Amino acid sequence: MKRIILFASVTLLFTISCTNFEKEKPTEFKPGPNVEITILDNVTEMGVVYVNVANYEATRAIFKPNPDSMFCFNLKTTEDAAYFSYFVTEEVDLSEITPSNVLKGTYPGVKGTFKYGENNFSTTTAKNIVIMVADNRYKSKDFDVEPAGNDTILIFTALKYTTYQIYAVSSHKDGGVGELTYKNIRKSDNNVRPLRSSSSDGIISISFSEKIKRGSGKIFGNYYFNLPISLAGVFEIEEDNITVYENIIEVSLSNKFPPGAHVCITWEEDVVQDLFGLSASEYSIKGISGGNWQGFYVRKPFKQWKFEGPEEKLVKFHDKTGFRIILTGEPPEPPIVRNSASMFDVLITYKTDNKEITINLPGNFTSIVSGNASIRLPQETLLDADGLVSIIVNEDSYVDKYGNGNEPFQMKDKYQYVTYYVISSSVSGENGTITPNGTRNVNVGADQTYTITPDEGFKIDQVLVDGVNNPAAVGSGTYTFTNVISDHTIVASFVSN
Image 1 (cartoon, rainbow, N blue to C red):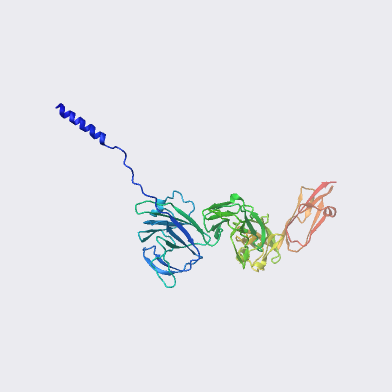
Image 2 (cartoon, rainbow, N blue to C red):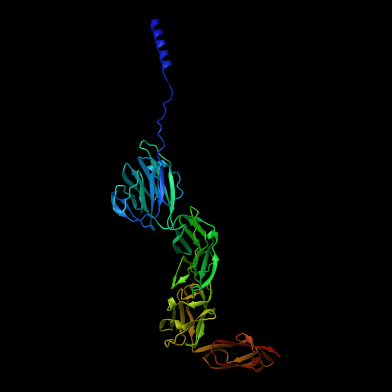
């Protein structure tokens, strides 16, 4: 038994001494091939395979690229590659990009991706992009396109004034991935350009051809009168009223621009830059041409203003043709004018005990007097004695020089047509008389005489005519109202001798 145990021990010791416990080395892949990207200029004609991104069908054709709306580039691996992939995008800040996700065509948010592998073509999310690959099997007597090895020529449709980024990567069949290659190309010029604008409520949004950031150039608002249209002034836009995001610059008009003003936006060079630091060019004023506003234009919101009528509770008048209603107002930017677009928005209503009529007042019955609205009544035979007149002025019937209109305005039964006026006579205290005494109706244009007589032992102290003492009447004891065309009062007072 002891011999058996000894033999086992010796055998185990020998086994341990002969076993190698080193770690297993991982499989190493040699580095993958790199991809060279070459921008091709002056390509006029080539044989291509057109890949339909909807159904992945490939069609051979002869193609002539448009240099204004397309660009061509060549992808070539530095050595034989089993797979390669690329994408073209307008994005600049591409975070977390790796050769692996480019090779797999899984990088999110790109404009379009084309993937090549094992002589097969496939695509993912080729939005608004025409993908064409030069066909190395296509022959023609007019041209011969035959790239060597893994050369691939591609054509993309492109927007003007836009910078595109091209990323490419390739790998061996065993999985070795090469370095990520990058190149950019800009279409048409070296400056970022504005494309279009929209505006509302005093804010204008101007779209550029690509993503932008704020530069150092100043922005200006050139503002115009509305009546007549002419340049009123220029204000620099404060930085607090400028917002830049994505490919848009947004300008808000501050309170220093008058309400209703037409404003054309201009700017200095370098007002914005694209994300590569290329600056926008200076943009000068366009203004108005041919009756239409040109350039980047916005209008400051309108501000309505109020009319005020006479303070009296009731205004009497006797002359149908000569009487004028005067309305005062405080527009933001006087003077005011009658709005030609609303020439029948002033209404006059005549009313008596048994009839009523409303008339749209034509423009020739209105005028501007000392900056106020003057309204003349038309000759209306239906207006009888004691008839009441109301006036309605609809909104925006009158505008200031920037087009700001009035608020709706109404005065109901404010004016009264009369054929006579009332004169009231009285004595303050006692010790004398005035003749005639009391209230008297006096026909329009007539005269009315009053006699003031003190009692014995008294004399005339004052004769107040419409509240003002008349020394001549105090001395003579008489006063005559001549050509009466309004209501009057006369009050006499006496004092002891």
